[in-house]
Image 1 (tube, rainbow, N blue to C red):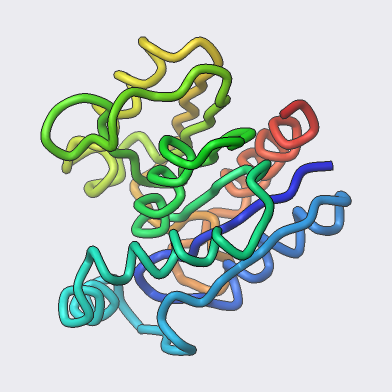
Image 2: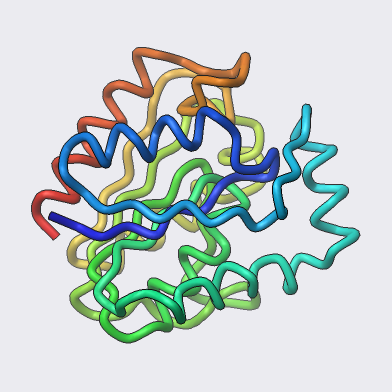
Amino acid sequence: MAEVLLFHHAQGLTPGVRAFADDLRASGHTVHTPDLFDGRTFQTIDDGLAYIREAGFEQVRERGVRVANELPCELVYAGFSFGVLPAQKLAQTRAGARGAVLFSSCLPISGQWAFGPWPDGVAVQIHGMNNDPIFVGEGDIDAAREIVAKVKDAELFLYHGDQHYFVDRSLPSYDPDAAALLTNRVLQFLDRV
């Protein structure tokens, strides 16, 4: 079974993020869900991003990176949207990573925003909706395609729809069919890494 460090999105550690972690735990995986916002949750993405801007993007991302210091190195790093920032940084820079699962966001592995090249032997799955104005409209899908083109064990899964937080069952954007398919794919990934 895998040990997963799962980071929440900009609306915080919502009941939906906790429920997703519980789904993974129910299949025998160990899942850590740190709260990078000290108990705060937000009604909208914009409200959550305003909090992150106020606290500092780098500072909030680094909270996630520091959490990993208390855990073993052989982790799968996962993140929803904003949570992809610490997850992807750790997957690319912390020795021993077993894999990464990136939801609705992805950073490039070359250029200004990159943490560097993708490390050899670290598998990655990337999930997003094909009409999500953030994932598609802001270029994350291009970063995901770059990873898939350059990394041996990389997969990109696109789901029909335009929602950003389609896996979070506590939010109106939840898509139960897409979320169920995503969960099955993630569980298969965790079983093999």
